[in-house]
Each structure stands twice: as structure tokens, then as C-alpha cells.
Length: 193
Image 1 (tube, one colour):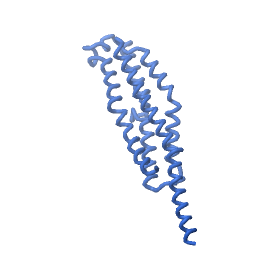
Image 2: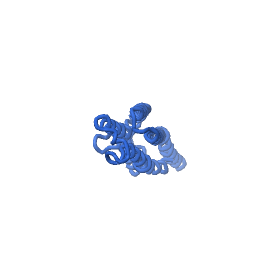
Image 3: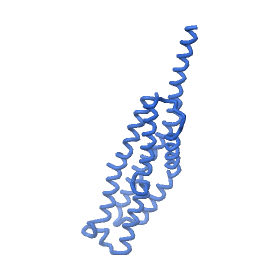
Image 4: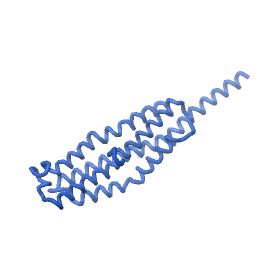
């Protein structure tokens, strides 16, 4: 009888451990891999946009076209990642301890913040906000005069302003926004595997 009880307890613990690992492999890891792809795309896309800006006399329609295409390329991945994080975060079934469940909630919240995170007003994506920024500068250029795009002109140089915006996004804002995702992922990985 004691062997039967002991066997049942061992089986239950093994089932729990197996369930945690399956949860990680089936849900958390695929979502995190998607987020890494999205983050790398933002970094590469903005680096390429900066090359466009640095190599031309003034930002042109090509920059906007490039960014719109870049935004379209992974829109399905971004939408899926957001939908998965919302569903995962609101799921009722808890196969993990409360501490891990709370960590999962924080991870999902970090994913959603990142995906709509370039603007606290309106929740614009990183690409959308920059496209709006470039287009507004282009309207100023076409409506006003070319002094906007040259050093010594309006705010010294809109070209420099846009290049600086990109540098800040690549070097500070995107990594800072992605840090909580990695932090919560690391917490969950150590608890689930």
C-alpha cells in the first residue's frame, strides 16, 4: 500500500513537472521567439532608415515607403504576438504556482506595452510613430522652404533631428522597452524548466 501511495505521489510530481515544461515549450517559448524576431526587425529597420537619412540631402519619400513596407512585413507577427500575450495572460487554467502565474501576467503585460510602446498617447507602433514624424517633417519641407533640411535652418536640421530620433530609439528606447520582456522571460524560464 505504501508503495502505491508513493508511486502516486511520484507520478503526480512528474506530471506537474512535465506540464510546466510543456506549458513553457508550447506557449511561452514560441511567443518569446516571436518577440525576439520583432525586436530585431525594429532594430534593423531603424538602422536602415538611418542609412537612408544619412545618405540623402533630405529625407525623401523612399524613407517613408521603406518603413511602411517594413511595418507591413511583420504586422501579422506583431498582431499574433499581442493576441497570444493577451490570451495567455487572461487564461483561467493555472498549471503553475501563483508566483509563476504572476510572472506570466507581468511577461504578457510587458509584451503588450512593447508592441504599442513608442507612444503613450494612442499606442502607436514604433514604425508608425516614426513614419508620422518623417511625414510631418516632409510636409513642412514642401510647404515652407528648404532651410528646414539644412544646418542652420529650422531647429538646425530636421535631417539631424530624425537621425537623432532613430539613434535614441535604437540605443535606448527599444532596448529599455524590451528589457522587461527578457527579465520576466528569464524568471519564467528558471521556474518552468
